[in-house]
Length: 374
Ligand SMILES: [Zn+2]
Image 1 (cartoon, helix red, strand yellow):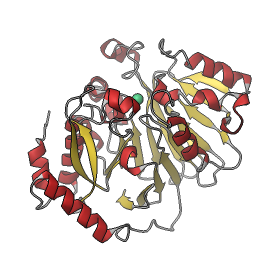
Image 2 (spheres, helix red, strand yellow):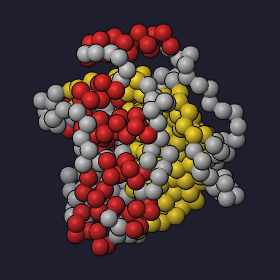
Image 3 (cartoon, helix red, strand yellow):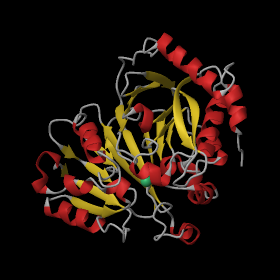
Image 4 (tube, protein in one colour):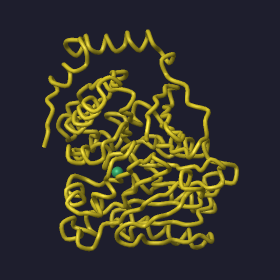
């Protein structure tokens, strides 16, 4: 496995020696360029919008078809009890983007940990008023978390409101999210571990590695959403033809498990992402203090991969904090990151507008970056 030492990465970021000077260089550069360097998103045909919502240290990904008639949510973020204000962060980000009909045609829970499903409870409870949404179809992996026991309650509430809860079958299921011709249909390939993987992954008990993962495609664009899958899942998936097919090159990667020590070099070489979006909380806050994501080894691998694959396009813009040794006394390290490496911790919610040849990735701070796909 490739491990990039911090000093090697620091040397790659053009001329600033020492962390303090490096940060001063970044600050001066950001002040000088501001948002003026951010490219405009194209006005050509919009194929789909994918929003990686700020939800504390948790996952919540909203997919909207151009006509806003079909909206899909993959995971629903974290509780206030475990991350300060996580519920408001999630609902504000979600409801400000949803259409007026307040219906999710499809909702998916990758696995039943609280940072991925907590807000499905309020969304499917008719008495929750403005936080109550209609979910027509709900797919999970059939597992329950003995610690929270929320999954069964959510399934029951969905049934009571006229929705249909389902369990994803093993392997790949293709779901058309937005109809269209060959170049404009948006298709989600939802993937549950194959039965022959279960012994190696410890499924169904090992909730993270039994996550539902998915690949979203439209035209030549694709995005991999890896739930909380860890390095064990990556090894098993890459050793199997069906797993390799799922992990073939993709435009954008949402790594597994909030940038934990997974996302190995083998995965990066298979997926060949041009941009990466991490779902992480702010260092020291709530569950981020407890679990300390992302890990610096994983972030350094991602930085090295992006830098090596497109050196002329990659310049440092912002500083991301990553944990050197994951425990409650984590030593947080500063890493300058380019526009192509995003994190909900520093970017807020991230909106990806997909056009026929380019994806425009915008953060909550008004900055954007264009990523081509062909
Ligand atoms: Zn998680």
